[in-house]
Structures are given as C-alpha cells and as structure tokens.
Amino acid sequence: MAVVKRKAANGTAVWIKRAVVLGLTALGLYVVWPSLAAVFSSGPQLRHVNPLWGIPIVLAEVASFACMWALLRLALDVKPWFPVATAQLAGNAFSRIVPGGAAAGGAMQFDMLRQAGIGTTWAATGVTAVSLISTATLLGLPVISIISILITGASVERNLFRVGSIAVVVCLGVMAGGAVLLFADRPLLWVGGVIQRARNRVLRRRTPMDDLPDRLVDERDLIRRVLGSGWWQALIYSAGNWLLDLTALLVALAAVGAEPRASVVLLAYVVAAFLGMIPLTPGGLGFVEAGLLGTLSLAGIGTDQALLATLVYRLASYWLPIPTGAVAYFLAARKYGRPQHVETDAKGEIPR
Image (cartoon, rainbow, N blue to C red; front, side, top):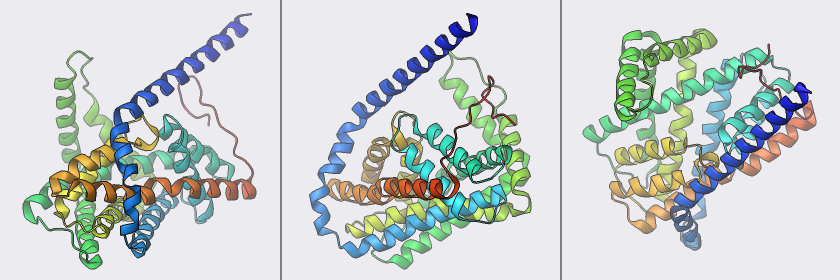
C-alpha cells in the first residue's frame, strides 16, 4: 500500500513539475513575443539579400558544430564521428522544441551515446566536461569583447577575409585565457570570489554562497582529468565552436549591408548567448532575438538591418539544425536502435 501511495505521489509531482515548466515557458514567450514577432515580420525583406551569402553562413555553422563534435570525441575518447555527431545533433534539436530544453536535450544526447556503445559512466563524465569547458569559454568572451572595444573598434566590412581575421584574433585570446585558467588556481579562485561576492550582494535574502571558488577549481580539475594531454585541442575546439557561430552572425550583418564595429558585435553576441541560457523557452527562443536587437543598436545598426540580420542568423543557427537533428536521430536509431532512457537515482545521479 505504501509503495502504491509513493508511486501516486511521484506521479503527481511529475505532473506538477511539467505544469510549472509549461507555465514558465508560456510566460517567457509572452515576455519576448514582441521581439520575436518583429524578427519574423522582416521575412519578406529576405528577397533583398543575395542568396549566395547563405553559403558562408551555413558553412560557418556547420564548422561550429564540427568543432563541438571534435570536442566530444576528445572527451569521450572515441574515434568514430557518426555516433557523436548524431547524438549531439539530435540532442541539440530536441532542446529547441521542448520546454526546459537544455536538460531534455542533454538526456537524449547521453542516451544516444550509451545506445551506441559508449559506457554509461564515461559518457556522463565526458558530456559534463564538454559542457563545463564550453560554458567556461563563453564566460571568457566578455573580457575579450571589452578589450577589443577599447583597442580596435574595427567595423564589420563586406570582406570575408577581414571578418574571419577578427574571429581568429578573438579565438586566440580565448585560448590564451583558457590555458591560464586550466593550469593556474589563483586566477580561477579570484574569478570565483568576484562572482560569489556579487551574487551574495544581489541576493541578500538568500543563504550566502561560500564555496563557489573551490567548486570552480574542482570542475576545472574534472576537465583536466578527462581531457588529459589533449587540453590544448579542447581549447581550440571550444573556442572554434563559439567563434565560428559568431562568424555566422558577422557574415549575416555583412549580407544585409550593415557595417558596425565588430568589437561591439562581439559584445552583442555574448549578451545574446547568455540570454539563450535562460531556461524559460526552448533554446532561449525569443530571448536571443531580444538580446541581439537590443545590443546591435549599440553597434550603430538601424532597426531594419538589425531585424533582418537577426532573422538570417537565427535561420541558420536555430531553425536549420532542428530538421537536421531529426534526420540524425533517425539515422542513429536505424544503426544502433532507439535509445532507452536511463533514470537517475534518488540523488539525481546516473547509476554506474
């Protein structure tokens, strides 16, 4: 009888959780709908964009995804590209169509990797390490963007070589900063302390946080254990993943004839990327658009150009990967069978 009551209570809790997630998603879409609708309303203006610009934009996004696959292969210590690429594409696509998408997409990616024969523990550890180093790389971009604003102030030109050179310079800066944080404790402890103090001052009514610097060091150590001597390759792949996506945005701006300062575009991209992590909508839908529209205006871009550039960029970076992920899931299921979801234990950990 107790078991039946426990199952009923768990089932009720699951439905309540789903209702809360759906409610938050609806609220998030309501808040960002004006920006999302404005971007979609610029659709008819696509006829004024030369279709040939779509080639470098899509190629930049493909290369960005390839960097993530290479990073996963390195962390998982596997040679085949197929299981890693299909799992990442399918998980990424799933995260963009369901509420609370990041967790759901990560779970699907893990299940597909396990179904392909990659050990449960190693898959969980590798995916976690990749997520940590990718987020850490993104956290380093604001510093690079501020420095580039102060030093360069370069503008985006309709010159792909110049656009690419800007991305390469930023990539080198990110790699240098990442290498320091991977092997030096003091900078990481300092960063953690700054974030912790800021958090405690802003959220004074909550329990003060006192272990963030040590947690950052522990997570950094996990990355080093997983990557081993391949840490420098991981930095290249992680930086390439973000910077090639940035390149797609720069090319989209060039395609609509905008010539803002590239350094400020980098800052706009970072703001949009952080907003995309807000779990209220799948894949940050609407929040990314709102962030880009708001910050691109600081780069001297007119409203019409900002709307059209955002639409072009999001078509390639957000919408195109969704059907691609569906195809990837079908191909992986055909080769390895449909993945079976692995439930976590009472502590939220994956059974070993």
